[in-house]
Amino acid sequence: MAKPKTWTVQVEGKSHKVEVRRKPWLAIGEVKVDDQVVAFFPAKAMAITIFNYRQQPFEIDGTWFSVVIKPNFLGYNFDLTRDGELIPPDG
Image 1: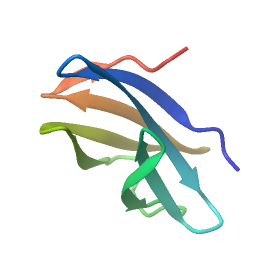
Image 2: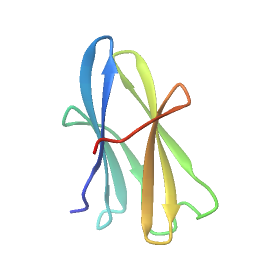
Image 3: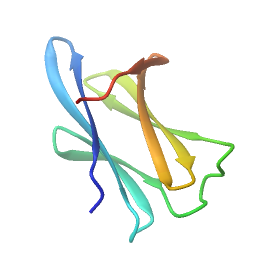
Image 4: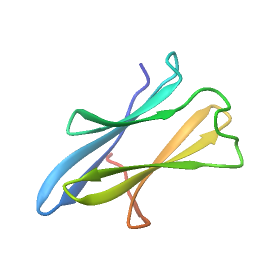
């Protein structure tokens, strides 16, 4: 299984762990918050062109976040935003 990309975010004084992982054998990606799946997105080879990207929105306690899914030649890269602001990943 591919290693997930993780972020720790604060919402209303609470810390939450966001994890994004691609499951290539199922051609999907998943977004988890505090170990609970909150969204799926298509992630098969060439589902998103290398010149394009898509966003997968999700909510944590009334605050909206978005995973930015950017393909590259070896797979995908993921960023996390809140109100359009990029959030740095853990580690």
